[in-house]
Length: 380
Image (cartoon, rainbow, N blue to C red; front, side):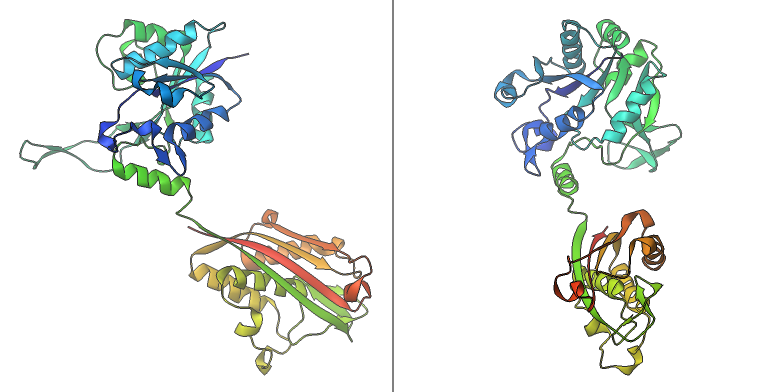
C-alpha cells in the first residue's frame, strides 16, 4: 500500500504579517493558524505521518502537538530538508510526501486530494492558479515601465506533492535558496504536473490576510437562516384534499379561505419566518375576497420571490404532514416534484413525510390535518 506523509513548514517569522507573534501561532476564528492547517491534513486518511518543522524559538508553541516536530533551518528549503530527513529516520519512509505552508490554513480536502490523485500518475504535482490580471514591470520611480505577457504564468500554491525519494535527492543536491519545492524539483529535472488551485488557499502574508481568513473561516460571508411553519385545517364537505400541491381523492375536503393546502401553507410560513416577514395572513389577508379558493402555490411563489429579492437561496425543505388519513406515502414523490417545480429547489433536497398522532387530539380523531415545515435559507 502506498504510504504518504506530509511536512508542514512552520519555521518562518512572518514579519510582513505584523503582530509580533509569528503568523502561524496567531489566532484566527478562535484557533491558531497552524491548528486550522493541521486539521485539514489530519482529516485525510491517506496521509500517515505528519512532520511539523518549527523555529527553535517556538518550542512552547509545539509542546502539546502529537505530530513529530523537528527544528527548521535558516531558509525554507533548509527547513524542508530537515523535515525530509526526519522521514528518512522513520521506521518506514513514505513513498510520497506533501509539503505545505503552515500559513495556508484554508487548504481544502478537495485540493489535497487533487494533488494526491495526480501523484498516482506523476512524479510530482503542485496546485496553482493561472495569472489573469495584467502584469506590469515598474521602474525605480514607481511608474509603469512596461507590460508583461502573462501567458503561461501561474500563482503557485501548496501542498506540493512528490515521490519521496526523488524530492529528497533533489533537496540534497540543491545549491542556493529556493522559493518553494517546485523550484528544487525543477533544478533536478523532475517534471511537475500543475493541479488547479483554490482562491481560498492563499498564504497569510499581510495583516489584511488575517481579516480575510477570519471572515471565511467564520462563514461571515454567508447569512444562514432557518424558518419553521405550522398550519392546521379542519375537514368539511368535499371529495378531495390538496396537499403540497397534489390533489388526493378523499371522502372529505379541507376547509379554508384558500384551497387549504396545509402542507404548502406551513412551508410558505417557514420561508416568511426565516425572512422575518410575518406569515401568510399578513401578506394574503383572509378578509380579502380575492384570495377565496386561491391556489396555495400563489403564496409559496410569493415567499420564494421575496427570498430571491433579498439574495437568499432555499437550500432544503422538510415538511411533515400529521394525519390518520388519507395515506400520504404513495403521493409523497409527486408532492416533492411539485414543490421542486415551484421553489426551484432540487428534489433531493426536499422531504415530505407523514406521521400520525397515535389517535390523540384533533388529528387523531380525524377532525383535520396539521403540518409542520422547516426550511433553510442561505445568502451569498
